[in-house]
Amino acid sequence: IRQVQERMDYLTWHDALTGLPNRLLLTDRLRQTLKLGQCDTRVAVAMVLDIERFGALNEALGAQVADAVLGVVASRLRRQLCTGDTLARLDGDEFAVVLAGVYDSRESAAHHARRVAGQLGAAVAEPLEIAGSVLRLGLGIGITLFPKYENDEAGEVLRRAQTARHRAGDPETGGQSIVFFDERMGESVEHRFRLEQELHHAINAGELRVYLQSQVDQDGRITGAEALLRWQHPQRGLVPPGEFIPIAECTELIVQLDRWVLGEVVALLARSAGCRPAPTLSVNVSPRMFASPGFVDELRTLLAPHPDSARRLVIELTEGVLVHDPEVVAERMAALGALGVRFSIDDFGTGYSSLTYLKRLPLHELKIDRSFILEAPHDADDAALVGLIVSVAGHLRLEVVAEGVETAVHADWLRSHPGVRRQGYLYGRPVPAGDWFGDYASGCDA
Figure 1 (tube, rainbow, N blue to C red):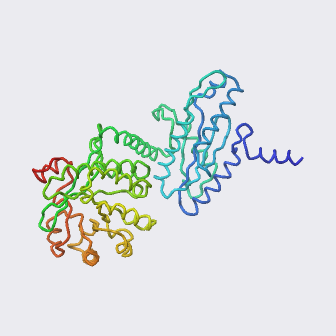
Figure 2: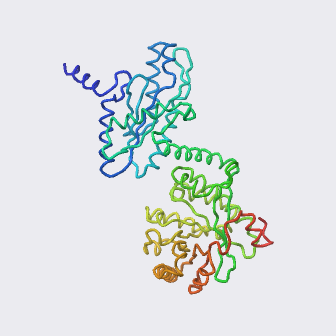
């Protein structure tokens, strides 16, 4: 009797064919997630999926084969999801997913949902051999973000996802297999997703470019440059960094981009060794790249054929990198510093600005964020902050670079801080590396 009761309890909440949660348990999970979202305004994701042309498959191969297909599909979907995600079978070939994560913005939730949906579709699309036939299946996926309203309900969330699913494959949607209930959100996410896929291709397709922006001393003499990444898209033209860098930063793509830029910069340093004076090049390294276990070894390998280049390489880090696991950060900085590599804090003054890490870490330079420089000639508070940063840097024997020097007014104001180097449109916009070296010195082989 006990076993019968346990089996009945199990079937109350689970689908007998696949062993997945059923509609009742899914609704309960949706209610729990809704409570979280309504308490702290965060965003969650629900999806409804079904197998394209499953009815025709059922008629052609019979119910037994169709049930076996459902079991395989359920298994493939489950393997793509994380612990805590809910995968349920609603009815027939209709499944639902509630992602466990809650997100701080609708944009980040939508982007993650699109990525997961793509993984689910790809997993199911793998050829399936069953009953002597090789089947190629497709999924239609509808996605909704929730809560959408203050008093949103589980049934409404599911209905919106089903509505979006019914539009998947509709000619009016362009036959897409993944559709968002919020069409504008879907368009934005599709744009980001396409851009991400194209960026993957760009790395190996020769579409990336290194641009350089000059840094000058108080007398206007060029001392070096900051290396900046640009993407020359074959159709879109030059894609603004603000459009593709944030996408890369959400994924491992940023590590691949950093790796590519570092390789190019080290090569430029080697080729410019004959310049007199030989320039310094700065390059921004993302927190994800700097935290990767192989970063130090990768950079050491890059620099091995060009040991003199290390002394002209400045790695720019944001303040957030320095306060996360400071012992590991200090160890990596020391290892690279032993090769001659120097370190700069980018956008100084906008983050934690802790005097502790300025004292303890092997830093060489501070870069004052452009927002302070732009207003310093007219704003006493910004002027005082810049003066304070320059004073602290002087006591700690750190160099200072002022970003955002765009007009003669900015340059004149900086004369009160004679040791500060400058970077900004007044001294030149970012230009292709070859053009920059061509202007820098006729003796450079670059």
